[in-house]
Image 1 (cartoon, rainbow, N blue to C red):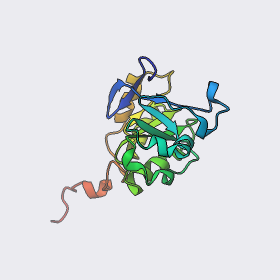
Image 2 (image 1 turned 180 degrees about the horizontal axis):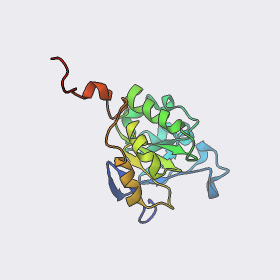
Image 3 (image 1 turned 30 degrees about the vertical axis):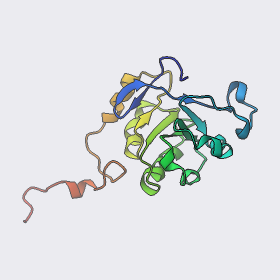
Image 4 (image 1 turned 135 degrees about the horizontal axis):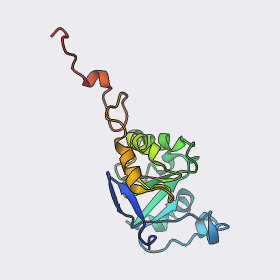
Length: 181
């Protein structure tokens, strides 16, 4: 059901993507209301509005993920997090950083433990920072090479600040030589 030969970065590796991203605001579905969107069989990532409108029917399926636009609140999913294997966060343009906050809230405040995927205008320069706030999967922009983007996860070897991936700041992790014992 997913796009043929589509690949993503997940957990530090390039893998085949077996999920279909449903974007009702594009193409033939542009004028469809969320409650009227037909959700196909198979692994499908639906927009938040479609999930909320069709929740009763979709909640029984184990192959449904939800994507959040950058102006939507992750708290809308707080009661559904345990049943969602995947949540995607859309980056409509490179300079829109609201998705970082959404990811951090999902991981740290709401305790989401499933796949957290960055979608949209996702570039190599963002991957290291996206991973820091909790993303573990990246659907890199189609005009970019995945192998190059994958290297972006290791652009920096030291993390100074705390985040989802490092709970202690650098000064608490470093043993100072010559310090009084």
